[in-house]
Structure formats: C-alpha cells, structure tokens
Image (cartoon, rainbow, N blue to C red; front, side):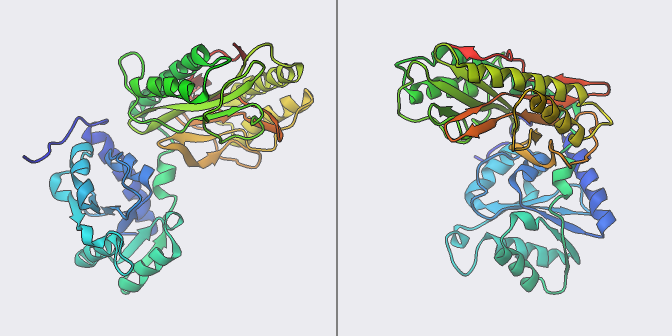
Length: 387
C-alpha cells in the first residue's frame, strides 16, 4: 500500500509564499534554478525534517514551476511523500547503487535531472557543499552559468510568519518544562545520565498537549567542566557543591527555542552570585533595546556596557538568530553587526560566559522582535536554581 501524505506543519499556501519570496531573489540574480541542499532550508521550503542529509539530496526550485522537485535517496522518498507538502510526482528517488560509491553518488542523480530540464543559470548553496561537489556540478553541466546562492533561502527565514512564531512559542514552552524537570531531578547522588533521561523525556513528550517533534542537543556542563560550553551529560554522579550549566531547546516541527540556566547543588559561591546578577542586568538591558529599528549591534552594546560596568567581560557574541535547526546563520547579536531588527525576527540571547578553564556561567532567553518592543518566548524565572 502506498504511503499517504501526513498532516502538514503548515498549509500549502504558506510554503508557496516562501517559495515565491525565494523565486523573487532568484530573479534578481538571473538564476532560473536553485539547488537547495542545506537541510534547514529544505525543511523551510517543503516541511521535510527526516534526518537523511548524510547522503546527497536536493530541493530543485525552478523559476517557472510552482512546486520544487525533491531528489533524494530511495529509502528516504517515503518520508518525503509523508512529511512534505509536495505532490508525489515532484519527489524523485535515486537507487541504492549510488550510495557508498567513490565514482558516482546522489549528486550525479541530481545533475542528471538538471541536464534533462536544461537549466541555464544555476544557483548552488556553495557554503554547504564541498569544493569537490561544486566542481562536479560545473564540470558535468558545462553549458550552464553558476551562482553562489548560499544566503538566499537562509536570509528569507529570518523574518517569521505568525504561523512560525506560534511553533516557536510552543517550542519555548517545552524548553521551560524541561528546565523545570531538570531542577526537580538534579541533586547529590544522582547520575548525570539519569537526570538527562528525565529531561529528554520532557523534550519528547512536550507540554500542554504539544509533543516535542525532535530532541535538540543537551549541554550539561557540571563542575569542574563549567568553563566550557558544549559538553553533554556523563555517567558521573552529581556532588554536593556542584554547579551545573544547562543548555537545551524545545523543538516543534524543526522550530527550536533555546534556553540556558545555571543550577547549584547547595549554596552558590559569592563569585557565582556576582556574575549571575551582572548577567541578568545585562540581559535586561539588551532586551530593552531589542526593538524594531535598532540593530543587532545596539543589543550587543547594551549588554556589554552593562556587564563591563559591573566588573565582568564576555569574549563571545551574546546571541544569534534562531529558528529551524537551532542556529540560523544570518544575523548575530554582536558588535559590528548592523542588521536592522524587524518584527518577527527571533533570537537566542545567549549569555554563556566561560571565564576560566574551570568556571563559567550561563543564562539565555529566546525572544521575538515585535512592532513596539520584544516578546520573550521562554518564561523560566531568571534565577540561580539552588538545589
């Protein structure tokens, strides 16, 4: 029995709106076909979220056709039929014979299709492709002109629709619930892995009847590993006096809301209390200027000026655009980024501060820029969690 198309995250009209915006950008560049290979961009334009990007796949957008063509591995084609808004006829699979070979691969199937439709000016997401793959496209399609269109779809994702914002709110509620569960289960004598299992359970089950549709990475940096940012849980036991820097995210149909909080088993040190107070002040100063018409630079400047006045520094940027697949590599909350804030941009105001090799602190919020101010999507109290 053929697989059926499943319930779509968005109505067909939402995907067509996004595609028209991308096609407008293509027309401005003279591109008649865009080869989309970045997984988050494929999700954005089709609804497909299955984890199959470890082998070649591409969404081909033609300036003259309403729907894109999705070319991917045969075993993953049913997932595309089920998850995406695309008509079955627009999903083309390539055989297993192209997997794990040194001379030909799935990109050859993609190129074969492009040769059949005779595209003249082709856009590639070259930042996502190896030089070898880019060379294969240009060598095999020798009569076409090529354009690096790496940012075309990515930047289109920066301003969210109201439908996207709703999923961001739901993802934020899941993130909040996971932090609340972490505060319940972390304690002396508890194994880090067991606490992580409880947190993951919430990220999968979700909250308020809305399930998490994927589990994003969890960073659980526990003493003495608080001076770094990307360590997961271990099989070690939480000790009295330990500090835990926790980062996690809720996910709804690929849309992610991140949150960071610091926990202390027992009374936090004076040093930890001082940096917490300074970072919260900086966070609130940043949110106060995160409004339409200001820039990413303005937000960063407000944060850094505040914590510097309180005796602290932070070397890393203080945030980035967030949406599909956690990080959107577009606007960055850092000095020198003059991207103008517009309504329905969403950011992770990420204030992780790794001070020494054995000491750091984290707090963050996911927020939306509104017409007049800011909507903080994550609602967890901004406090040191003492356990």
